[in-house]
Image (cartoon, rainbow, N blue to C red; front, side):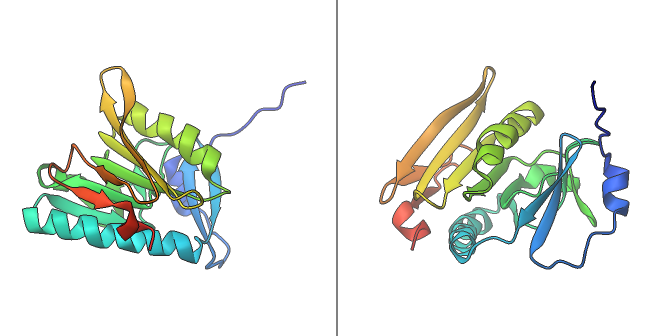
Length: 185
């Protein structure tokens, strides 16, 4: 006997009454509602450090906008993730609307926690690749590593990878370099 799964669409997702739970965020991934626990303090510190370093670079160069979760990123009717950090180039600012991002960010960062590892490394990697996110950063808060994936005609390839005290960069944000010792303070 097969059970039928009903996929949730964006309109249903926006109309849902979520419990008044300040410790959770919700995403829509492949038509399924995904509840995320509140991030750990280490996750928040990494996110803040990255946002400061990357944000200052983007601001100085006037490259676009850097945003952080929670913000809905509408990719299609069945996929509305909330990346930890995302960048939208100046040329593409029109995808930023009052109630979310309606289009594909240029760069997305997910900070992996033990409960999100499979989703971030597999499901979201495939999702962002399929929708054409040019650069995808995976930051592992447990192992203090960063992987930077660059979109190529054949899919994502690892452009940079570093651990602990190494350094990573961004081809999309030309000239941006990040020392992991600044990230994992």
